[in-house]
Image (cartoon, rainbow over the protein chains, first blue to last red):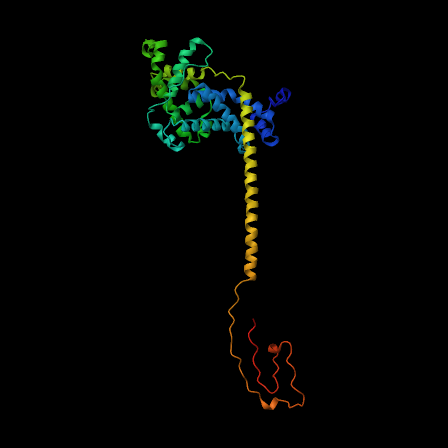
Length: 214
Length: 151
């Protein structure tokens, strides 16, 4: 590793934006390493929930950080760093999908316009390895991931950014490069679709909502 | 005043009906909670090492690309110089050997000498100078041909 631990320790207190400034101005690899360590988990999580495959998610997370290194000069200090990084990750994931020809062979614009369509052949994730810690939660986690993968990509993107990464609507609009109203609509529709897909799991666990009320 | 407010409360309740809670409220809540409680993926220890390897590989490729681009540029420049040099030489010789205007041969115009201006001298006529055709002085006792066109 090119960075000494003492260098890293001195930088851990800095904000993302300050670290980014250091990285841009002084080409500080220590600042870059701190940013990688801060965001490797949320970025990999986001990508895993989006692509549904652990190895692909790791590879795409590295690609995201590689782009951060390569295109550091394109970051402007007025932007929030996390939003900028999630935008890169989202673009990386979209490119991955386009290359794999999963959502038509189309561009981003046609992808966005296809949100009304029902997904036909979404990849069901490889469940041979699910990185869950607790055995009892594995089944639920698998079912949720499967349901997520059945959502159209734009809905999935929106719901993952909102519910898993807990970004605000405004931040999601910035990451997805779309209107606030569109984001709200996508999140609502994703929730509705998830309810349909996960109702049986819920009933399996807790009984039907009506019987519970009675 | 407080008493009056207190009296109005049932009235407000009557007007403001309670907001209906959707049937799926609990299901919605469970999904949101479950999404937030999804376990984090495990990040392998080799993550950063692999990342730095990729960065260095990328940098190496970039430096090769730069080197290649520079060598291509230099080759192109050198080739251009080599290609242009003979062309520039030939273009110079072309200017030197550029076709001249065709020589127009004109008949010498004979002008009869005006006797009034002819001095009669006993001296023999002068020898023509080295450039007789350029002399505009009338030749005594003879015709005065115009100088032939320059070659």
